[in-house]
Amino acid sequence: MKVEDFDFELPEELIAQTPLEDRTASRLMVVDRQTGEVEHHQFPHILDEIHEGDCLVLNDTRVMPARLFGTKEGTGAHIELLLLKQGQDDEWETLVKPAKRVKIGTEITFGNGLLKATCTGELDHGGRMFKFSYDGIFYEILDQLGEMPLPPYIHEKLDDRERYQTVYSKAIGSAAAPTAGLHFTNEILDKIKAKGVEIVFITLHVGLGTFRPVSVDSIESHDMHSEFYSVTEEAANTINHTKVNGGKVIAVGTTSTRTLETIAQKYDGEIRAEQGWTNIFIYPGFEYKAIDGLITNFHLPKSTLVMLVSALTSRDIILSAYRKAVEERYRFFSFGDAMFIRPIRD
Image 1 (cartoon, helix red, strand yellow):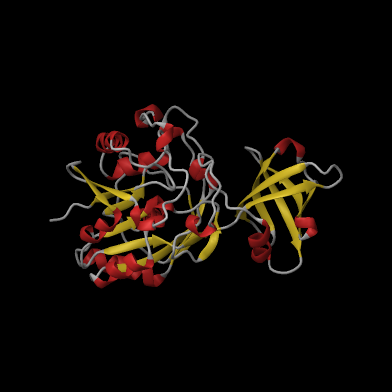
Image 2 (cartoon, helix red, strand yellow; image 1 turned 120 degrees about the vertical axis):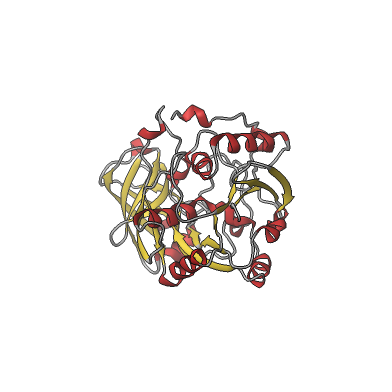
């Protein structure tokens, strides 16, 4: 299967640059998983799509203000760091700009010395390992000095940091938001619960590999980045109970999907409490074992995320839906509109 098979025309002006004032004001395209039939709604219509006995699965990760701007000791050169993944103690895997100025042993100072970092290793793609030193609590200092790591296709400044967080974000550790969840408010979640729908939270810390383009021609040759996930026993039991009783498991976002399918592939469809790292790559031909339906945003052409949603229904259905989205002027990507792939019901 070729990467080009997942390409489509996308006018640049359809890439949403800012979030809507009201989280639920986005549009919702409903795509029937079986027939490909498309309906156009506003996001609150999701209340009519999720039924009593179903289970809604949300990713409660919280985005770190992971972009830091500092100066190189000795030269005063300006260096930008993007925190990706925490290692042992205060060591982090990062992306650096400009990478060529940073070698092992390079020291960088942030916020007039509130935070210091020493390069301890060189990685591929401009990556570096850094050991941080500071007084106090690291995440409090990061909150003071860091900026939100918005995706590269968003050029507008974000006025309110919380608009790049879900209302239920809790477990800090992501370098990007699980953006399908940005459409939900506490009010709409309460209404979903009131219908008799179970709501469970799992965690997957989103890495910057989410935005990394597929650089090979054949998708089978693509290596996925690894991301940390965690599922509690309570969440696992609720999801399994839903499936046994004939309810549908609805994932909010590709991150929730990848977490559940990672576990379900190991245990023949059963969800178990565990944590670990996943580099699962879902594309057409993949047999879904955990989820029945999916709430997601509109993704980049030729991206692994378009491949994932295509696997839940079909490439032709998704590309046809995307063409309709372009015709109907839907807003794309992180701050854009939503799609619901409706589960097959008896």
